[in-house]
Amino acid sequence: GIVYMHNCHGGDNQKFNIPSTWNVLPLSADFTDRVSVMKNLNICMTFKATDNTIVMATCQLDNPDQLFSYDLSKRAIKIRGKCLDYARSTREVYMNFCHYQRNQMWYYNRVTKEIKTLHDEYCFD
Image (cartoon, rainbow, N blue to C red; front, side):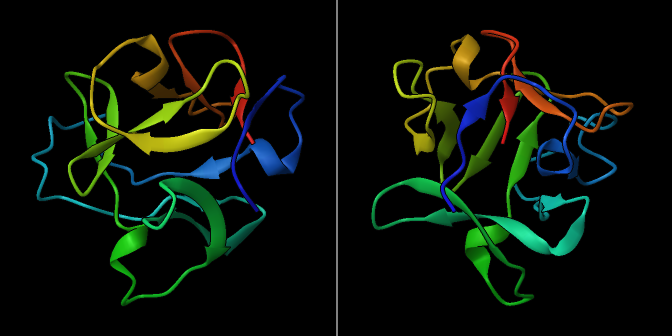
């Protein structure tokens, strides 16, 4: 389904597996990898270019819409030159032109496995 930001509750649907290098190395845009759900590593974050939404779908090795990069200096998750964003009014997560405001600045808590923005305390869900 479509990804939204919700109150953090510690449930399995808010725990993610991210590439181990995302919070360690200043990566170039050429390094891409998948983001998957901890409870089912075969479910990956997927970009739907038709409407710029982010959905969770079955991981496919040959699907370029599941290969995201992370710009550590800007805390931006990117694909095809767009940045992961979320609409604060609807809490929907989508891809947008990069403006690097706090609702496009993402971080990962390695203890809780939650993905959040610097804008507020909601969790990727």
